Image (tube, rainbow, N blue to C red; front, side, top):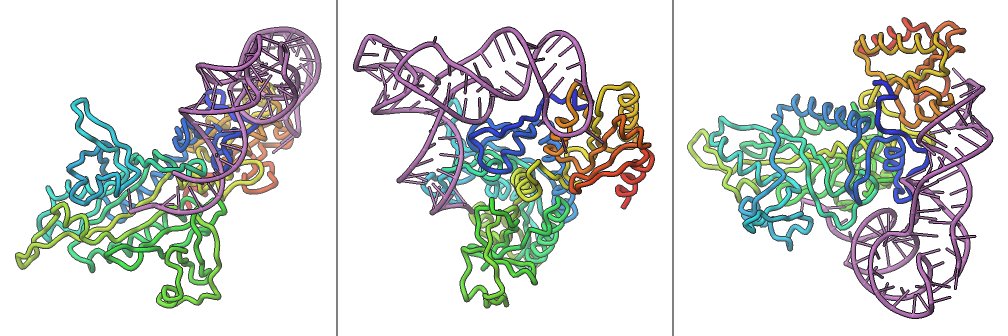
Length: 421
RNA sequence: CGGGGCGUAGUAUAUCGGUAGUAUGCAUGUUUUGGGAACAUGAGGGCCGAGUUCGAUUCUCGGCGCCCCGACCA
């Protein structure tokens, strides 16, 4: 994409009403736009990142056997009453509305109820299990306090997967595989090294749930990490008893702040019992389906990546989620430079490489460099009279301090090799 | 929800009970082009409402909105 075509612009100063690093950098770069407290829109560059994160999650959920669906945001009262989650006294963050005829509706804050109800139309035999379904869907939560930029918002897309199994044993098999899928997701988006599977409170059907917590001061949670084992305990269940039961030693645990980027949860039969999701066993017995839920918020994940992977100049996107892989900067307006840069842009694009081409005229070199640092594409390629005199283009990785001159063909093969790897 | 802070050009910030200033961004022109260029010219502003006052952006009250800490986060 030619940068002259992009309708967003960078800005030098972050809005005064944003204190979090993720919001500052994402707004300065034109990735997102704030509509109101806790509600953000995604702009072209931000949406590209968002979609890449979504696609990585989608691939891993598909590999797990999940089937993608999209459930409705509008929810009716009758679906939620059987589980006692319609009342505002029980669930205080519903956004509710009404039909013209005064029928009450809610905007879904999660989707256990509608999916459980829906599944009862399709699941009736042990032969139908296990199954799992997931979606990327907008949730609405009337948080008393939105905060930290896109980390805690009132409207956000969530990947929520729900698993349906015959019994706890079958459920646990899926649950264990989901842990691995989640680890892959966080590794692929570039924050695996900072993300710990964390024991958290479990509910009625299991002692623990598992959260995936990424270490950052911007996080809302306090966790205790065992670095050697690569796991952590959430403060909410941090007791001597729990530490011992997990085979950990208290003096090896390090307290830190972290953000919950994902969680997996054993639901048991709470929802299936209430909503009548049953199946018939091989011996003809009727049993409640055993469920689990598995969530990741792609937007929060994007915010977390920015919190964790940025420096004083801007964002350092991991290749897997960067809006573009290469950022070509055309410096100066000599005909040779423009021709060389345009040719490079076209040949990289033809090779299937995503390129942002800073073809804007009349800007100083410093301004283009500053924008490139802020926007954070993995590779910055400068085409200028100087680079041409030196016999090529200057290639610099965003994550490294110095660039070096390469022939364009050399650069192209570098990118292609990495792709094939 | 408890506590604290704050609303001034697109953005960021000053000042002041009496003509609202600066930077940046924007427009036009000339020059400039390897780390947010220079000069000139121009457009652009007091969240809403009530009160006090000769006069309110400033003071008072109410509303709306935003941020931070805590609580909450199924």
